[in-house]
Length: 258
Image (cartoon, rainbow, N blue to C red; front, side):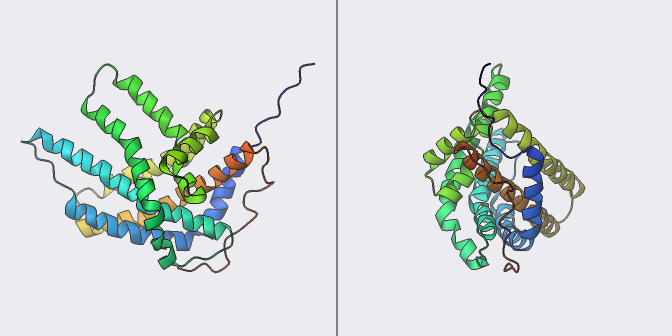
């Protein structure tokens, strides 16, 4: 008989999602406070500095698009500290809000730079659409999936930008379809709900939109951060050939700080 290689020792998808929900519920309050406060500041700055498109100046649309890409990269860089706080709570620690925000200076620049590296090809594609647009978009999506764990690599392993991309690429190698499916399950519903909320708030006052955005982001980003944390840990263990019986064996502190 042919000896089959041992199966990849990753946690089943259902168990991974269940562990994500369990840790998300346990750590929700401090992660929500962290995310909502950061988002409130970033959204206010975005409203103040994001340029308005001018129908008579087509180039202004490109400026708005680039400014949006830049703002999104800033969001990813600053909100990377939510994942750091989730990891600390997962270890049973209870970092304060001040200590968490201070980590922006540590992780923010690298996560921001990584987000810009991944976003600029899509920006170029949108501004130069042609017959190769669809294949190019497929390549971009493939690269996005393979490098989607670069933020956890920076936050959890203190990797450089290049090292984080390489680490993510290697961890997801051979697990691309599984990762793609997991990210569809975890991320697409959030994007759909966010889009629906945006439609409902169309025409609302700026303070209302900023406030609702802070609450909505305060709910969604902690979930995505916990998901990224556990997925990264699971793939890291699997790459070493081992995995724990349960991912939720180390709950956060009983009384996490606000």
